[in-house]
Length: 390
Image (cartoon, rainbow, N blue to C red; front, side, top):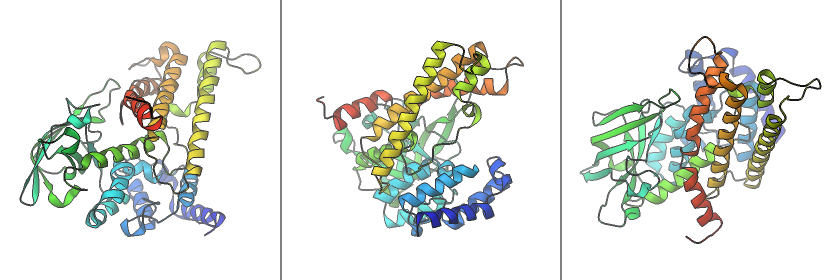
């Protein structure tokens, strides 16, 4: 199908199937559920996945066109719905999973039926993830799992978790790790949300006390999970940076919809010719916008050069680190432009946007930590991209 013909197909389908009520409906509403159902029926819940696993079988350019048209009408894109399922464990199973695992798990990810979370970090194993101690012991047809994970995003709402566990304590630490898929709905798993400075609790502590993981849900070979775990992180960093298959930029939401120049004029003022009144802020905003534009152009160029749509390897760390710095710079500029109005926590003296901006700024502090700290990313870039000595 030609590009123009496919774009017309997408436009026509959206016109017939995507309503204003679906766009404006709250998470979990009947309108949103119906939208997800229609996406799944069409195969566009995971447009780039093979049709036999619930996907749409689109090539990279078709996928890009699809997401651009979703963007144009304000439709929730498939990647917005399934989080870690779509962007992380899904592509990992496509690459390393058994046929049985693909058929059991991927269609439910594509339809948004199942929510996933990640079991990687532990209280004593963060940046040195290979030192993890949560163990899994094979007993009959199941692995019995004991230990603790931390910073498990969305564990309080997840149905399944993909875990890195120690399955051989008597070999070098990188060699005794396996990945296993575990059902969260069992008595051996306890989840405790962690309250963050931003006032939200997207992260959790997760405890495993004789929890059960089925033998057939071991991903890859026993004791070879470290390689698979690292590859999943590359998928994660690709998604975080915007380097994934989507050719459309992420839609701004909340206070992000207010551009920096507009904020500056509202809170600082403007000259008679419409320029931001403060020359220092004006220069900072121009620099940030230039950097952001250059970053997006680079992402677009890499997507076009990588026509297969396959996620890059260690180079994903470049885009993750730069993207995190850009996010933090942008939110910091927002609160600075608002002055004292940008640091309010509650009260009638602040607008809804001002209060949301404060929380977004605080939450953005985690962007250089989540998915691997920027320090870790710089080490990866130095050693595996630039080839510098240890």
